[in-house]
Amino acid sequence: MLRRLRSDQRGLAAVEFALIAPIMILLYCGLAEFTMAMMAERRAAHATSVVADLVAQTSQITGSQVTDVFTVANAIMDPFPTPPLKLRITSVVADVNGVPRVSWSQGDGLSPLVAGAAVTGFPANLLVAGDSVIMADMQYAFTSPLQITLPNVVNFSDTFYLKPRASSSVTLLPG
Image (cartoon, rainbow, N blue to C red; front, top):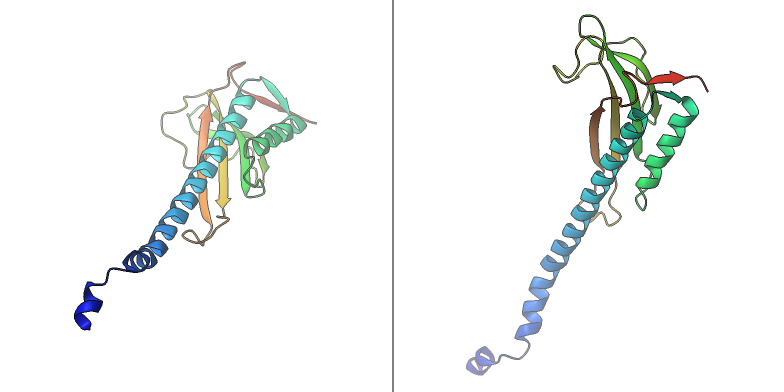
């Protein structure tokens, strides 16, 4: 009788499937979540570079135009949620000693930097005395819709530096 049970192959595929299926489902969900996180990070980075590029293309910009530029960034994030996207645009000008200082700053979810303050963490030798650059900072908190392999929030951040193209620096006008 035991010999007959041991040689019986019926149901073997069902047992193998029951053992392998949970691992394959977990692997599939993990790849889906990882892919969504990567896409969200790339969209947030692209939105930030577009924001910096739009500001760098002008010689003057108003506060309401900066708000419109932030709206463009939110549109780029679609279909991902936009409330976790935090942005800041800063015009940085090197003083006579070559120290990068904030000329003006506007934020959407991130606090603006204080005008006249030295910029910390700025790349060395990016600016010489009198030079200007537009700095765009981004933070994005990605929450996976599945939360199987990524149960916690994943935070992304990035900074972009672009030279103004229409003039030596971009001026922020009131309004």
